[in-house]
Length: 315
Image (cartoon, rainbow, N blue to C red; front, side, top):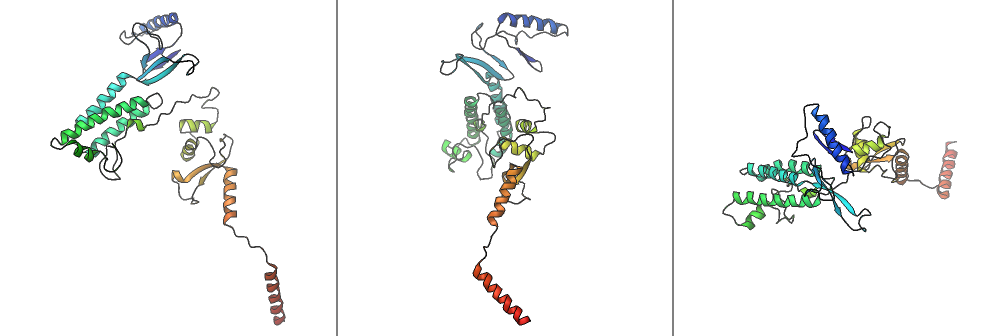
């Protein structure tokens, strides 16, 4: 199997002879275009066994390796772990260090404004693999950089004073690096990014099969569907909020306003329902607020006698 992205590629195969033959074929094919494989980046390795002192490989900032485990953990006797590579961690740490050093005279809010986008982008990129321990380690490294940044700004203050000034310890928020005030933007932590495993596309699926429910939920967009419906599908995991059943592409859907105000289009006020569930919900609400008065025989007789008396007087 060949995996290629831009000028990087990986050839995967269980047979070593096939890998060696693939390297020769690729070298011959590239030579026809005046190109060649870079020796320092080209190597043959195994994800489980050690070959020439190396095990596993790095690709696009990821480190792919396999580790032996007991039969109770895996029937194959090993597990595959994908993590951020050491080189990617070093590059990210250097990037954070450059930002902190480049804003020595900036305010805390300005420093956070420059750090948050970098932390968010890097964490989101590695949020689909085994990155929780790495995220925690990067937060620890960043804390030491921020501590040095704060000590440099106040060389004559003690450490307790500095900690209470830049971290929200007195407010009960722990080691949260943020300016004072409830509306201030805090520093984003790497480990606050949730780990969400990548879900493979089902073998029978195609973007052109017309199943807009599946692809709207998966990709977050679809050409012919309103963005509001797509967001609700993703938020509700493709299920009707009323009956809990999965939507099908042929189902009729309605956007329901939770508070009953059709002019409010806030995301937390909207819910996606089957049309029959939507109709049933509104029917039950109408029945709940409707007052039905049962006829009273005494009242009927009283009104009847009054009508007769009135009628007699009019005659």
